[in-house]
Image (cartoon, rainbow, N blue to C red):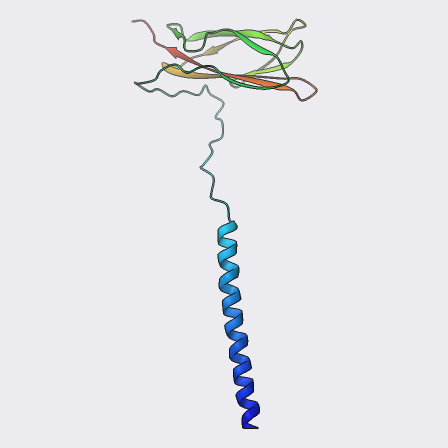
Length: 150
């Protein structure tokens, strides 16, 4: 009987130690597989995105294309303008949907598009996106600096 109790105690101890070791291993594996949190993302506010930096140098036009032609004819990337009303125009596929920042329009039957946006003083980011019914798209990102005259 004493031998049976000792065997039960040993068996119980082995089971408890095994469970503890497995739990530690499990939590270490789960911890390593958990992805790092993503930086906080802001929702678009419906306004022109503005950021002013005293030491800003114009960057090359950003380009994303997935099978759709998109040419921005106005404005030129890095342009400095005095008028807060800016004409954004270009050419894409006929009847493609075009988004300029938060404005939506449709290209005409030749693919031409044009609209105006209002700039804030300083550096303005202008994002032009075009897409067609087949899921093709293209995107351009420009920087325009508005420096009003006194």
